[in-house]
Image 1 (cartoon, rainbow, N blue to C red):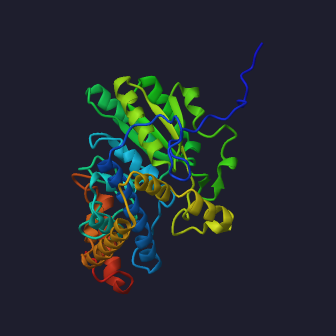
Image 2: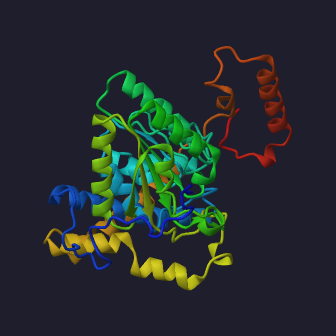
Image 3: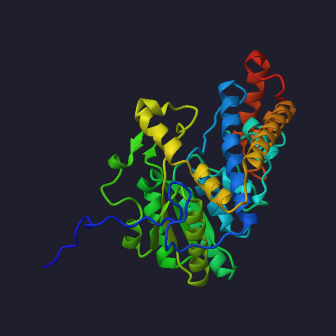
Length: 380
């Protein structure tokens, strides 16, 4: 009689390419990155970092209602996107705007969505940061945790049936792995042998709930084996490691018709969102240590500088230009009219049912009776 141990003697290894000082680790095996791709990865990481700072300020000024940053997770966003093709389908959570940025979503498009104006593809019906783009194969963000995981598996199954040379990638946090949808999706993907990459951002916190209160296992990576899913743990603050792991995962997912689970170990340096104050549940010293000692952007900058691909002058010019573009995009987005309230009731039914028509009528009457409570630039 032999029971399987509830906990392995050793933790699963964490794949790294760059050390904390941006130097290549001896004998590290990784996908080579040329100057053009490396510089674009870095500039997009800086752009994402700057975008977070500017939009966060805009929310604090009352110009937008909500925002969530990706501070500390820039490498996960950009490096994973760089390893994919635009034919690959993305099912995000709400902390992967960098994937859209890499694919060509403009700063103006980001601003339009956050301000919910007429140019917003979601017609102002989503919270800020809940982006989506049909053109870029980026499915609209859903605030409900982990619902995107089963959807991703279904989409991956359709790619397999159509014999497409593409895969699906779906992102989620450690908190998402505590939802039933995570387990159902992994089992479904393994049984149906679909080309799907499950990318877990293990950043230590599901809002205020630490991973120690979520599971006793050695992180998320070990769960893959239970479902028959090939898995890897990666340093989520190492852009080269992320790029290499996702590149290899994509090749295996498509050529071998199999799902892959990637657990990226990182840290959510920012608050969970503008509705949160993370200093209430975690030490400020811990946050600052990750911000200064483990910053993925600074680490990658050291590597490209060591290759002679970047310099201080280029850094200053980039940050100044990006901030100017963002401020301009916000000014433009603020001036664009809001969608009419009538559009709240469109795009679901070909012929709206009577109860929906009644709701639209009641909303119109409410606005006319109480115009002081509604923005003057929102028409019926």
